[in-house]
Structure formats: C-alpha cells, structure tokens
Length: 213
Image (cartoon, rainbow, N blue to C red; front, side):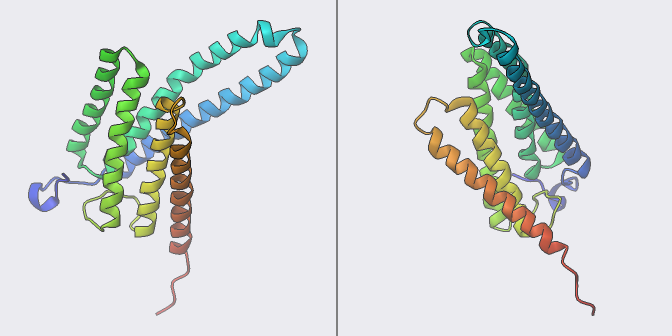
C-alpha cells in the first residue's frame, strides 16, 4: 500500500510540518473542550446557588447550549484524530487521496442515513482499521512507516495510543447504549495507558547518556 522511494522516486514520509499542524490543532480543540467544561462547571456552580429552582427551570436549557457548543468541537476533534492515522502509512500524494476519501465516506454516510453520528461512526471504523494495520506493520518491523521517532518501542506506543483514542471516540459516538460500551472502554483505557507508558519509557531511555568510546 505504501509507495517506496525505489519504486516511485517520490515517496517521502509526511514531514514534521504536517505532524506539528495536526498536533497543534488537536491541542487547541482539546483545550477548547477543557475550557468549555471549566466555564460550564463554574456557571453551574454559581447558578445552583444564585438562581432559585435553577435545576428545574434553567438546567435543561444550560445542557442544550453546552451540547450545541461542544458538538462542532467534538466533530472537529474526531476528524483531526482520524487524519492522524493514515499519515503513518501513505506517501504525501496518496495521503491526500486517502484522507479525502475517508472524509467523503463519512460525510456521504451521514447524508444518506441522515445521521451525523452514523457518518462519524463509519469514519472512525475506517480510521481504526487503518490504525490496526499500522500497529501490526510496526510490530512486524515493516519499512516505509512515517514516525517522528526511530525507536521501535516509541513507534509501537504511538500506534497503540492513537488506536486507544479512536476506540474511545467510537465508544462515545456510537456505543453509549450498547452492551459493548464497557468492554471497549476497558480496551481503550488499556491501549491509552499501555501506549503512553511505552512512549514515555522509550523517550526516557533515548535520553540516557551514551558511554564515551
């Protein structure tokens, strides 16, 4: 699936610029969600004490407004997380086609089913399948995968971490009323914890002093 330099002469791993842009966008979106949660919590705390019967008269409207604000941010975050996945596996030109195809598939499914959640679910499932392939190829030591770090442990940790985020998002989007919610939440937690531990351990090991020759 991945073009090689020998075959095409143009396969270049997606550079630090793309990685940095996705990272900063993700941080900004997560920061926006965190800020909204903080402001909403403070307002709820104040309203509970200052407005009589706020739980009955004002709380439903408050929840509706919070959902209206959080909805677009969460959709954008899911899209950005999905775009983080194929950049490991494909060259720059192929990445553009794959990423566009994923977006069109998600949007098209949402339009046909008239459900944003269904479109996001399909988009996340495709992202998860690609990420599973990335993790398997990383464990197998396949070449041509684009990572910032060259340490195998850090690569595997990064792959598991991304997969954990995708599974967690899938649980939120599609499985809150499903019997699979708790098992997959546990899987997501294990992937996030294991991926984080492997990534941080690999980074700390790479900073260890090198003995003098």
